[in-house]
Length: 584
Image 1 (cartoon, one colour):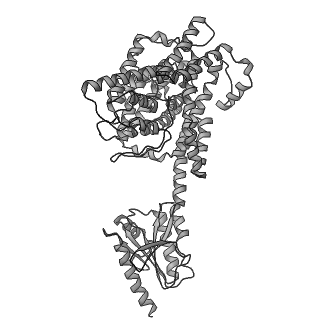
Image 2 (cartoon, rainbow, N blue to C red):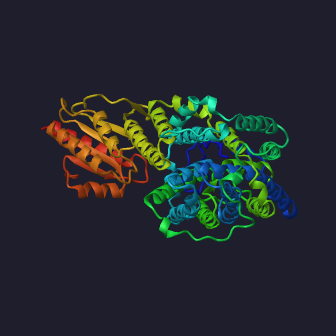
Image 3 (cartoon, rainbow, N blue to C red):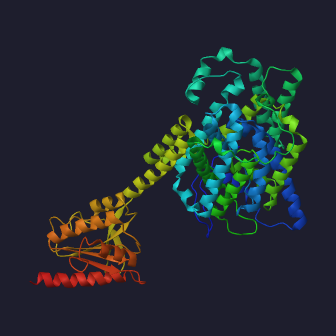
């Protein structure tokens, strides 16, 4: 089950930076684990880490199948195939690619319009298409796009996924089938029908909750969840019918599943859009996980290569009837804490899970459904992090709007809509914040030669040269903000404004339009505009726009390797022009 993701900064050479909630714990686990162990010791450590991961994945994988609305055995298939494929190909050697709650919930949302008997076949096509999307993203080297998902939006999305997961399991832990248009309405329907809750089902749920809370604090750690699921399931088997078990959902196949090709007859708009949304969610989460786990041998991690690895893992999982998979924070953290020292830890986890599927397939059918649901609720409750929510609130209104809106859409709307809303909100908030984060300062040289920054006058000073520097993004709305913050030419006479635009490779049509309008207003007041520090591309952009004559009332100076040289040259030209004008 997934913990929330937080900010993860990439080392030099990586392609992107991911801003997400909850990775600090994982990064802390990496302290003192960056040495590559010698041969035999490394294999032993990786085998132990793989065993712990496999044991943990038995209840987790089945719970993910329950969350996806399919036979839980599909979760075990994914935990068998995906760690092997991901471990072989990922640039992040310690990342474990396996089932995640966000991916499972997204798959469930996509398949819920189908009858239960049809979901198994459609799942194959959905997971394979998800892998193909990820494979294309990786081959096109689109790893940098993950940075456009903001911290506030990701916090809202992760919290929404957790809350939604909890609400979806209320029917299973109570034995009452509620009705309603969405999970919130169904939860309210359950509250209105408390007397109809099944006591036996609720008793198994309560026992599981006590065991999870107790055993997780012992030396068993995460492996304790296996016993927390097994003990109530044994009681249900001993007492007899009355509580639903996994076998009630359908037949549990024996042994390793055969290769299954996707049926193109299952193709639909819902599956394609669902696969696209799943690929985005999985890749953003996986990027955060992979970039929080340095490679023991010091090699560079690549987001785009990890995209490819997760894509291949999903294709393999789909062909073997598994759930969608991605870089898992919880499984990676467990593997690292267990001593993993190479990619073989993940590969061993997959191989050991395969042995579980071969040797103990019948046991899965006897697992109590309320126990699996309680495990999902327990894990999801840990994902909702008050510290991350407080950080979003403290960041201001725009962060609260982004996080809150994403939380609500994730809770109430289909996962595809929630993902699209989150990405759109991230971009809108970025543009909004960047457009307001524009500052204009006047540069004044003191007698001792030091240059100080001061707020510029509201009106340009007549007969003088004013030099300003601009900070912030000047694309789109930022250019309009600059227009309001520049000293105004109206009311001045024979004034010169020098605007430093050092190293701005491109200006954009909006900024060019703003500068052209300002230049005309300044020319009407018998003044001049100087633009300095322009990169060759920006200079060509100005000349090609034909909005003004850069050798007339507007003068443009190309950037030089010497900082300030183009501005000094512009100032000398402006002062000579002022002397000539004032002597007329």
